[in-house]
Image 1 (tube, rainbow, N blue to C red):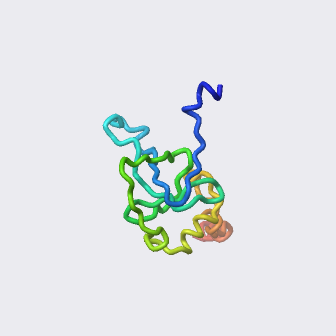
Image 2 (image 1 turned 90 degrees about the vertical axis):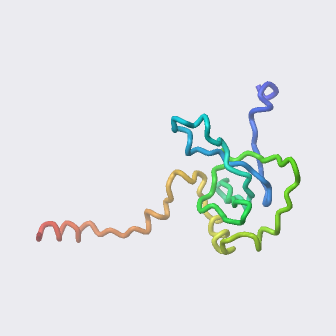
Image 3 (image 1 turned 45 degrees about the vertical axis):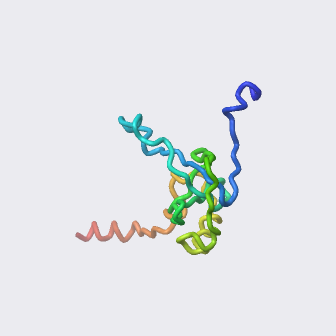
Amino acid sequence: FERDHAATIRDFDFKRGDLVLVCNTAIEKALNRKMRARYIGPLVVVSRNKGGVYIICELNGSVFDRPVAAFQVIPYFARKSLALPDLDGFLNVSPERIQEMEDSNVSDPDSGDVDASSDIDVDIDDDRASVDSG
């Protein structure tokens, strides 16, 4: 099986500074997807977090606000070599924000953030009291 499907089963491990393409999942359910771009890119890999998702940025240094799942990322093979500057001074976000994204354990960025739900503080008893008195 592995010999027959050696060209289809891939486990890419991208390093910092690698050029990649990201699958455009926004067009999957669109009716006119035939004429739209399937991949977004080229993009630059900034790092990979503990959950296995990639933090990527565009060629102008703007970092995506959410990490991208590993199954959506494929390598970009440039026809000519692209000279990229040093990523530390190139990015438009602080190193603290990059470190925060790296330390998160999110493995699926579309599943929702568990930490965001714990920040909401709702007191159900106060809501019932205001409804009963009104």
